[in-house]
Amino acid sequence: MTASHRHLLQIEGMHPPQIEMMLDLAESYVLLNRSGKTQRDLLRGRTLINLFFEDSTRTRTSFELAGKRLGADVINMSVSNSSVNKGETLLDTAATLNAMMCDLLVVRHAQSGAPNLLAQKVDAAVINAGDGTHEHPTQALLDALTIRRRKGRLQGLIVAICGDVLHSRVARSNIHLLSAMGAIVRVVGPKTLIPAECARLGVEVFHDMTKGIAGADVVMMLRLQRERMSGGLVPSAREYFRFYGLDFEKLGNAKKDAIIMHPGPMNRGVEIDSAVADDPVRSVIKEQVEMGVAVRMAVLDILSRESRRNV
Ligand code: ASP
Ligand code: CP
Image (cartoon, rainbow, N blue to C red; front, top):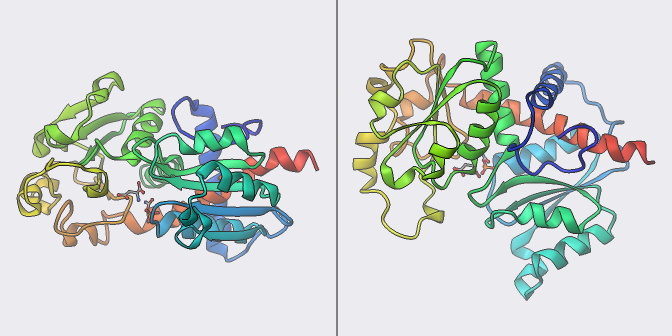
C-alpha cells in the first residue's frame, strides 16, 4: 500500500519501504496517543463504516477509536441487526453503504477474499479487518511495530509462530510481513494444524514445540480457531496444552529476553499459560493492543490522502 493505493487488502505483495513507511507513521501516532492529543482535523467530514460479519473486540474498537481520534464520523454497523438477516447479500449491503458516500469501509468476513471483492465494487477505500483464513493485515503491522519497538529491528530476528497456523489469517499476514522484512520465520504446531503452503512460503516448520522455539527472539502464540474447524484436528484441550501450550518450561528454550505475543483473544490454559500471558516483563500482549490503535490511525491517514487530494 502506498499513498497511491486505494485499499489495504493484504500484506502479500507489499514492499519493505512501504511497510517501513507505515510503521514510521504509526510510531508518530503512538507518541500522539500517549500525549493525549488528537488530530481531529485530518479526517473531518469523512465517514468510516465498520462492517463486521464476524465477532471482534480489538479490531473493531481500535478502528473506531482511530477514526474518532482523526475526526472521522464513525459508524459501527451491527450486522446481526441488519438486513443481512433478511437475505441481503454482501455486495448489496456494500452498495447500500457506498450510496451513503462512505469514505472508508472496514470489513471483517468469514469468507477469504470478501474484502477484495468489495474493493472492486465500491468507491470507498476498503480495509481488510480479517477475511477467513486469508489475511489480517493491520494485525501484522501492529505486531511488527510492537516487535520493532522492543527489539529495535525486524531483520534477522527469529520469530516462532505457534499453534493453529492452518486457520490463522494472523499467521499468514505475519509470515508475509516478517519474511519481507528479513526476519527468520518458523511455524510450530501439530501436523494437522500446519498448512502445506508453509514450505512454499519459505518458513521453517517444526512439530516439536521445544525445538521450534529454541533460540527464538519472539514467541507468537495463536488461538485454536475452532470456529473454522470441521473435524477433530486436535486432541483434548488438556493434551494440546501439554504439547503446544506455552508455559515457562517450554519458554525456557527461547532466548532469555524473548518476548511473548498473542493477537487475542486468548484461551488461557489452552495455547498459553496464564502466568506467561501476564508476565510483566516479557509479555507484550497489552502493548500489541495499544499499537493497534496507532497502526489503524496510520492506515486511515494514508488511505484518505488519496481522496483528500481529490477534494
Ligand atoms: N483475532 C484474530 C483474528 O480475528 C485472532 C483470533 O481470532 O484468534 O484473526
Ligand atoms: N486480534 C484480533 O483481531 O482481535 P479481535 O478478533 O478481538 O478483533
